[in-house]
Amino acid sequence: MGTETPFVNKNIIIRRVIFIALGLLCLTPIISAPIALVMGILMAQFIGHPYLYLNNKATQYLLKISVVGLGFGMNVTSAMKAGKEGFTFTVISIFGTLVIGFLLGKLMKVDKKTSYLISSGTAICGGSAIAAISPVIKAEENQISVALGTIFILNSIALLLFPVIGHLLGMSQNQFGLWCAIAIHDTSSVVGASSKYGIQALEIATTVKLARALWIIPVALFSTFLFKSKSSNIKIPYFIGLFVVAMIINTYVPFVQKISPSIVSISKAGLTLTLFLIGAGLSKKVLQAVGIKPLLQGALLWLIISATALWAILTVAS
Image (cartoon, rainbow, N blue to C red):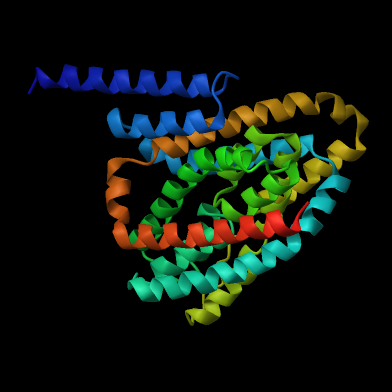
């Protein structure tokens, strides 16, 4: 027993050193968002996350701070224009996703609440939507975990795949930004994919995605009726308001405009670190807990929405 303890402690220290070193590397311009995500996934599979119990809160706070910081790189006028262009796509895609998700869940006999959480996460904004709606429908911990696992796995694929498809199809910045906002689940992956594509794509994707996130409120209210729940515990994503404030400050305060590039640069580094942490949280246990049916439902729903949105954007959006 006494001979095992030093070895165990040494192993933990090595894991922590590797984890911290990779995390710091993600804060440098050398590592892009997709590479950071892959690094995190590899860390989870082969080494393990030494601070897994802190991971969820860390990613939530870091993501929100990073998104607000990105607001300092945007202009109110162009953001409003992007929001108007994406409004029709947003409304149609949200309700279309919820309906198709319900039908797929029924067809594949996925647990009702798990199916609804996957559909809501796909329709609005991934993990944030699941976190907001789960208390409203009184979802159990295992249902939430399966839904989050499904969304995060598909998110990882989208972050790596979307920029490649965008370039192959010769999509414009406007088209790609809109497609990311509609078809990628989480805000972190939307920003990661669109920032790799270009500044204009990033601006459109972030604005449309955050406007889309506001639909958490009506969908949560609808959920109380659908599941006959009396709960009023709806978490409103306050960081969206701070993002708008940051945009307004950047547009109308000249002094801030001088330091905005630095704030945006730091925020992008924060986002890259967030994606590394998300990847590091996808442990073997998480992957095994998801199961084939929920994952298949989430994948089919995502493919249908992604392909439909892509067709609509290439046909309609300029």
